[in-house]
Length: 115
Length: 110
Image 1 (cartoon, one colour):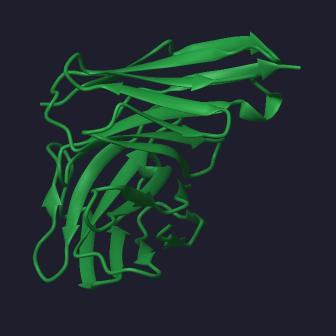
Image 2: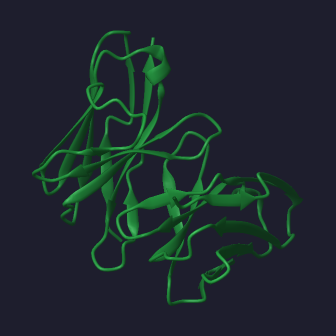
Image 3: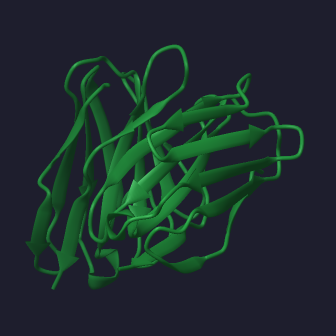
């Protein structure tokens, strides 16, 4: 199946700093990618849809100035958490749809801890 | 808006038992349904994908069924093993929108 990677897998940062998370489709192209956030013992919540060559679409309640998304190419989307706060600590997962059957392929996730 | 619910939220069974996890969704206009496994602190592992035109899919000890008209899917795990302990998530696709269920935390006791 198709492979999606994320980098870094784990990051610890100080409050007020910015953190960039990369999501790559390794063996296929993705004009659309999705970013999810998962708090402990909860399900995944869609944050935004990343669109190659255009602006991302954010879900209600997600601050677009805080969570900057850039879909720079057909294989790379980045999520930048700006001015991170401890409440931004979470597990961030990206996904990309395969072609034809709408199957979603997920990255391994990034654990963000803001001190 | 699509809502996906999973019952039970948690399940504990002795090793060797067969078990069923349930997933229900409110809007039957879906393209497919996927079952995932998530180990603590890890990403998602796709288990089975059922297209909207299909009734079931099987992989090893796992069997997933789909009744689109009633908005239900089940994941059947045969002869459970301690290694099956994880959280199981179902998700439905309505094209480019993907909706996750609340998850079932499974513990298989040796």
